[in-house]
Image (cartoon, rainbow over the protein chains, first blue to last red):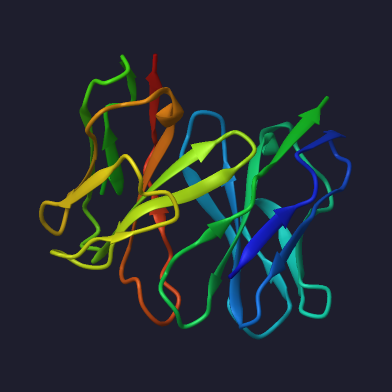
Length: 114
Length: 115
């Protein structure tokens, strides 16, 4: 069975500082990996995805993530955050080729301070 | 296009009451999903419908029923609400639920409180 661990429940950071949100997964088969963002009182929006190919994937709003198969990680990074990036971020996994069932991590709340 | 819409946005129930959460999508998607979101637990799949006329259990189906009314609509019913069902409920849809990648699009959520 697949599982996702987001290592930090909250990450406070100052505006214009870099940030990394950590995600590790466990699976014995090939997976697709995703990061979703949830702004306050809104639904989830896809930030970026890894399906295959290049291990460095770029998403919306200047975010990127790197797939590391040996470390089973998919950490999300942004070199300079803005106040508007304050949100909850979810890492998710699904088995490639299987049913489209997403397994979500518990979420990381990113708080950007001026 | 409105995407995925959910009604109501907020609801307060007493223990034992019943209610139905409505979800509709206008993207002609075949597959639809119901999730619940609880603090510190992320989103968990309650039920999904791979296509019109089919439904399957997810991780946490107990206490819920679903109906895929037609291709557009997928409702979630709580027959006898319990405080443990206090949560935020999200509906999602995707073009398909099999094989290659199909992005899931999420609705804005329904915040349910059971007293």
